[in-house]
Structure formats: C-alpha cells, structure tokens
Image (cartoon, rainbow, N blue to C red):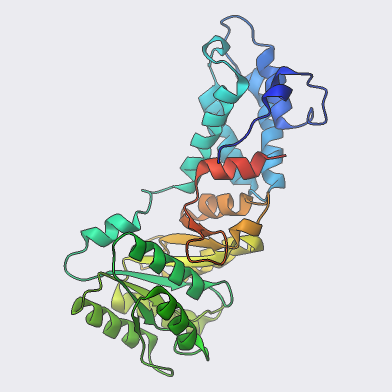
Length: 326
C-alpha cells in the first residue's frame, strides 16, 4: 500500500486543520518557489523542522529523526519545481529513500538466497528474545515462509527450560508438516542444536530453525548460555524477536542481546529483527525505525496477525504511510 497524500488538500486552501503539519509547511514553502528558481535551505528548514516534530511524535528517536530530515533536505535541495507535477511527486520519493537507508543499514537480508547458497551444511537460523514475545510462533511463520518457497526446514527445540515449550513446537510442527527435532528437557541447548544440525545434514532438510528459551536481557547466566549456543553452532543468522508495541524498550532489549552475543571482532551479535504484533502498532511505527537507526540491525519481517502467512517484509512505503497517515 502506498502513502496516500491528500491531493485535494495540496491544491486547496492551506488554512485547513492540517495547516500546522509538516505537509502544509512544505506545500507553503514550495508554492512560493516560482519559475525555475531552485529550493534552498531557507525554503526547506521550517517544513523539515515540522517533519522532525511529526517523526518524534511517532516514537522515532530524535537523532534518527534528524538523520531522516537531513537526508530529505539533501534530496530536495536545489530541486526545480518546474520539473515536478506536484509536491507529492517531489517529497514522497525523498522520504522513502531516506527511510529505506535507515531500515536497511546493511545489505537486505534474503533468507531464500542464503538457503540456496549453503553447500557444506544446512542454513541455520536461531531465534532469540525475551519471554512472551512470540518467538515460537514467529519461528513457525518463518518455517511456513521457507517451506512455501520450496525449502525443507527442520525445527530444533532448544528451549529445554520452559515447561510446554517442546509441546508448543510440536503443535506448529504438525500443523505445518515440518519435522521437529527434540531431546526433551533439562538438556544443554547447545548440544541439542548441534545434534539437530547433524540430523539435518544427513536428511533432506536444507535449513534448521532453532528455538531458544526466552530470557531477560540482563540475566547474565542465561545470556551466557545463549552465547555458548551461538559460538558452538555458528548459526548463519541470529534473529531477535521483539514486540512492536513495546516501543523504545525494544531498542534497549536489542542492544543488550546484540552486545551479549557479539564476538570480539564484531559490533553486533544479532543479524536481523522480527517485530511481532505490528498490525496493532497504529501510527507509533517509529520504534521500528529507531531500532534500525540506533542499532544498525535491520527489520527482516513484521508479524501482522496470528496465521502462519501473516508475515511481511517491512517496506519504506509501509512505514511512510503509517508515520504520516492522518
């Protein structure tokens, strides 16, 4: 879905209820640029200040909002209005480009390509996060995604602490028709992961999805156990699962998980994020933008419902629409 700019309002009276917004400020600034004169910093500054305030009101951190506005400023600076048919055609691409750079600070994660490129062993993806954020359901959604694209995932039950964790995965496994590797409870999660990878290597499974026990990010012993699993099994992707609704608390959780799991030679121990309950986030989508901008870790998917196919890639168009919808 594309961001719907109100064209009638753009052409109409700027004294509407939206006249104090960044959109009205920007329309006013650009409408004053006549002929072939180009947009200057003086033209753009008031509107971009209003844009920054809007971003911050939607849970985008101040420094990330500033980064986005500076990027839009650079894109619009020197533009000649005679080249564009409307303010929308000028501003929206600049916004989407700026937010895309924040959402994908590194090469976009392509799980399907990574699965296909593995040769010596299956593709391995570990899911981590705090308690109760939907890690197991998210893992099941990713399993469905991979299976629907021709891959053969194996689910590894490495939450050997929480009562019922294996049984919960069994339900997903049966519903999806995806095999489950488990060794019960009170076992070393790292050992179970290792055995699951070995099992997949000798079977038809080309990817292993590792479920881990939820833990608070400040629990040093449990975080050390998680790092052991990562160090000993070397997953290709470590995915942090967090709730979109927790806002900036999720940024702190991601930072601590990333720091705890990072090897000495790397800045981060997490490769991507999946945000659950994104369908309920309303216009406070800025936390997702902040998460990427502050940590440098991209959001690979967002959960948009309870069904297995309710998993979407996070696009700049989606974010711009939610940030600026009225």
